[in-house]
Length: 222
Ligand SMILES: Cc1ncc(CN)c(N)n1
Image (cartoon, rainbow, N blue to C red; front, side, top):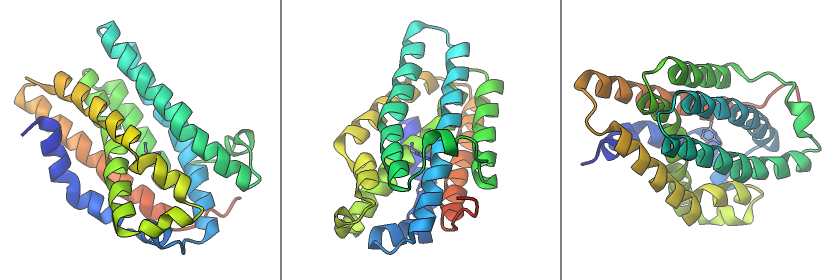
């Protein structure tokens, strides 16, 4: 089994808990309070801004152009794809990106992005950087594919554009590319560094869970 497949398998119980969170279950059923969804979109837009900085650290420490191009591709996928859906939702909430950029991240969100940025900044190189950002990418692909299987009716809810982004073939193909790149840079790591990488992957999977739990509560400042 590849290193990435092993990490994903080990972290599936945490991703299951994400899928079973009140937020995602209600989203699938179409009963999620609009206020909670609004809070999620705002926090996630702030999260994606901070997430971009993880790649900046990756680029700053890169050893060759292929690595830089990979971070660049990841960043533009996140910015143009995920960012675009969030902008559409913000418009539906009569909010603008400029307004929400001044809002604080909620504590669970801040703890997550701080940990990711510190990992990429202080890590030895690409392996640690990818460990910090991979759970974000691949857990969403896994979760939303299962969500759509469990709740096919989600296609008739206002949450469909979000679900479609992550349950689709394009996102799956992108996750496979990123996992393949990660596999390449993690092949042959010495055991202590491999263990450290597995710890980062797990810690970020737990941060994902905390983010979903947080999203079950509405923000009070919008
Ligand atoms: C918190 C979080 N985690 C993951 C994703 C999907 N890249 C996201 N948009 N937000």
